[in-house]
Amino acid sequence: MHNSHQGSTSIWMTTTEVPRCEPLRSNIDAEVCIIGAGIAGLTTAYLLGKQGKKVVLIDAMEIGAGETGRTTAHFFPPDNRYFKIEQAFGSAKAKQIADSYRAATDLVESIVQDEGIACSFERVDGYLFSLIEEQHLDLTHELAAARRAGLDVDMLARAPNQSFDTGPCLCFHHCAQFHPLQYLAGLARAFATNGGQIYGETRALKIEDNNQKQVVVTNGGRIRADAVVVATNTPFNDRVVMHTKQSGYRTYVVGMRVPKGSVPRVQLWDTGDPYYYVRLAPTDLFADHDVLIVGGADHKVGQEVHPEQHYAIVENWVRERYPMAENVEYAWSGEIMEPADGVAYLGRNPLDNDNVYIITGDSGNGMTHCTAGAILISDLIMGRDNPWEAIYDPARKAIHGMSEFLKEQANTISQYRDWLTPGEVDSTHEIRAGHGAILRDGIKKLAVYRDEAGELHSLSAACTHLGCVVAWNAAEKSWDCPCHASRFSATGEVLHGPAMSPLEAAELPTQEMPPPAHERPEEKRKPR
Image (cartoon, rainbow, N blue to C red; front, side, top):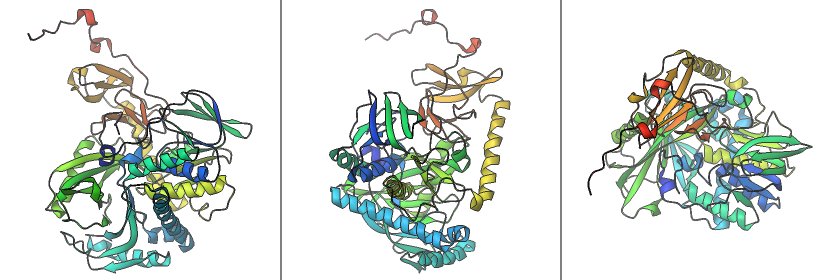
């Protein structure tokens, strides 16, 4: 699988070939149009196709090219903790969330078996630990709440067979992990075999309401459907409301070589903020060694001056605890959407008619939330009741996360002050090849990238969503919005919503313009 925007590459991308799909080139009709070919979209498409619906699935890039290919692909309990969910929503709702997590993991396992998908799905124990003594009481609260929610969980003095002392921990039995892109490839083949249609390189531009139908306008044609599912990590069809309820974070992952069998095949995650999470790569990927996959060091999208340094932060955390760790073989980052009250948004989009649905707010549990969302939304489209509908309702108010909601809104508003600050550089001469920086041009700000060949690419620095000043992400070679987490390639193409259109091209100030080609000094060629 290729990485179209030249950012980081995950272990999953380098060890999988996903099916390539032709772009849409005409107007078509469907019962359901699904936007986004990650785990959320493909699982929904698969479930509806199995129930006889005519489903069309589109993606702006290709299968798994979004955040599913950047996950660590674990299925473990919510990082918001069951005891906090219980305090906010009540024990009955906490149990519903536990039931949805269990059902999502069970569904993936059954699909793998039914469709014969080779994706290294395995059940493992998961350990929640804390190295901070003041947080040990939280583990006791979590144990009681998790058991009330019906989970199989135990308290231990430490996680067994680890190279460091985790201290007190909770063991959650029956967690799971897999190879996400191998799973998506299998899902796509099963969906297509059942009559489903998949179109790649087909970007949804807008959704129009048309006589109780919905029309998805794309760069290749129009899709008229009875229902639309927006499964794009964050919804592009909602300009404001949903984006005030959640915030985008970058999370960083390293895959480090370790001797075969030196690390137990379990999952670990801690109580820190940000927390770290640990798993091993599938055993069949490498014959002579294992790869220890560790993620963490999260920060708000577009709000870190040197995001590339976060790989070293994660690596140092690993080396302090796993002395057998050798070289860093893989390093990548991904984007997660954190809901204000800690619970995902799965269901009907609040600003549309009842036939537009969204799956968002993954909160670091994307594989689980996306699969649960597919179950819930396929039930709603098929006219069935689902007991999780209320707890995951995207229209719910952020009452239980009001303090977090207000903090995030204040943070977002403060980002607009960037229009008043100087540029990061005074001249394009300061921008090295392969890097970008913000340059002030009078009242405007420009996002300027110098490619590896030395050519300058000048863009408006205004995010096309709601006008925040974008920031250069050296780790991913992208322009990231610090307000609502849109991301653009170095040359301005949309990589992640809610933005729908690319950054606008902009001319450099006269004194910064490179001379015309015929006036440039000729490059002296070396004799052959």
